[in-house]
Image 1 (cartoon, rainbow, N blue to C red):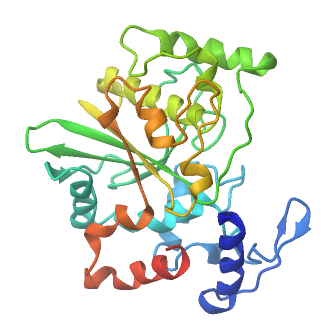
Image 2: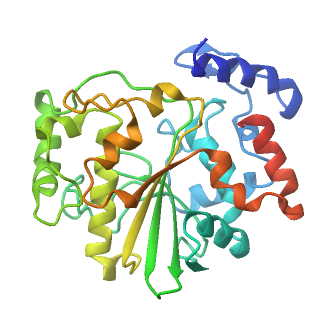
Amino acid sequence: MNYLENQRKKACQLVNEIFDCEAGGIYRGKERDFVLLNPLENLYSGIRHEAIEYFNDNKIVWWPGCNVPTGHLLSSQIACVNHLCFLRNNKEAALKVLQGLNPEFMEACADFEDGYVGFEVTSNESYLNEVKPGKKQTRGANCTSVDAMMSGKLTSGKKIQVLIEWKYTESYPKSCKADGSSGETRQNRYNALINDHDSPVKAKVPIQNFYYEPIYQLMRQTLLAWQMVKHKEQELNADDWLHIDVIPEDNIQLRNKVGAPDLVIDNLHESWTSLLKKPEKYRMFTPEDLLKPLAGNKELESQINYLRTRYW
């Protein structure tokens, strides 16, 4: 039984234990025992109202392209919100999480709609040429959005933006997104940025290798981070960035997924950092390790117990 099957089985077993509704919701045209009939129950009760209000107020699209959260129990977007939304208004906890990434963080910044965490974050301008000039990007759809983002200041005074990509049961087929007419469009968007003299990535392999998942997504987010710092006055005014990939420890299929044919390392972290000019800017965490600095916090005990029971 693979990780996806294990998590689906676990989720179904938890329906009667931690949710106030039954499963059997519709997904891809069929009733599923891993989809809640009341999708709002998919969000932890302690952050439910805040999360829904935040997405609505900021016109953020819920996966898969809806204006309400999904009832799918294995949604990585829901997992991300459940893990991080409680940090939005908790400066002390947000700082502790940042310090778990780098002990030099001395301050968490409320850069995201007056909160310390933002979801489905996009740049203010389309530096990756993903929408037509003058058209506004839609957070969570049809452009490079970051699952979550934080920012903070180091003791040196430098401000760092932290991009957080959240994975759960994802796996990817081996297909090249550079193929066909849509692939040509993608290459027209990204190739010049990849090959730019100041690009954060090293094109040490044929450029088509950047168009295989999950490398493709990491490439786009890295280019976005670079461009947001390059145009910092129009963005978060950050001096640098850190890119975090959150992947459960047991999702070996994803952690060892490379896809790109000319990258021979069967390890996502090693293969991607081999393509970065500054590999220290990319790090991989498990969900529990990311929140480990909050262990023992009595005020967050219910939240952490929920996450531990449901996900960890």
